[in-house]
Length: 348
Image 1 (cartoon, one colour):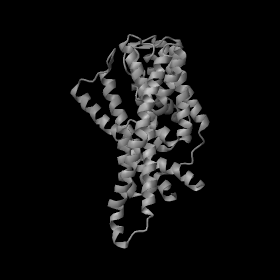
Image 2: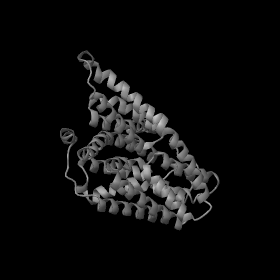
Image 3: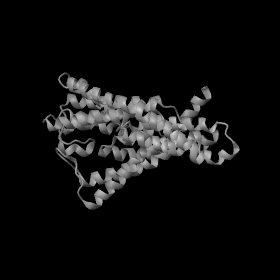
Image 4: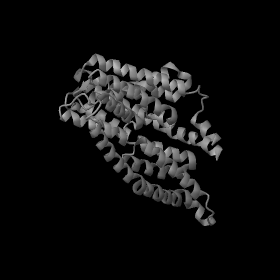
């Protein structure tokens, strides 16, 4: 059991190593399209140029594969080729059920262990050729898909409704307390359901003429990728070569307000990265609330600077959150003994 727990990190890193190029392609193209088009008050990112729209579409297409690829190759790490297809299926369901990358990790492990268990079944010799291409993927997909739809989907919907009602109640109290909670929610799953509840609540408040809720959210949105990008520059020996390269992409994504740029780091080391980005985003959001930072666009990151109220405090809040994130995660991380993906699989 102890050995298997150690192997789980290797399975996770197998998924992350295949996901990072997807995140970089999608994030950089989306960031470039938005950066070249800009954002508008009340509308957010407005991309009208046909070339930039196509660039955005390519980036979104790449991003849509992020969670399925993560889940598929976690399952591949556990069960080899028979795990890939059910892992991808579970990942697509995780994305469509809006469970974010955390749901993708769950789907990947479910698919991998289920496929490996079915592989261990003693079967007649004439059935063995079709086991890896038909029986194992089919049965595993049914098990993983059923669990994702009937066990995971409903609780998420109920959780989102509860969180939305909680935020509405909190908005009538302390602005700083609300900002801390929303900053933590934005960072926790980086584009997942908890992030979406906080973002949509902030965006809805713009429609009500209240901009000081979206302001802290706009700060919190960019802190995770910028913080992780800075962390790789400050302590490169604590990150793999692939993570260091992803750090540059994360910096670009952070400038444009794409929180997902931090996902490769969080997926590879969730116990150290997620607490660090949650604390950093909460600190940034709290400073923004204290400085009465308002955001008139349903978007985040430095790109919204032209449409924020009190831009100086916006910059101070972002810098504070980024520095806190980078220092905290590097404090928690140990110096890395680097392994390639081939090494992970060879030792699995």
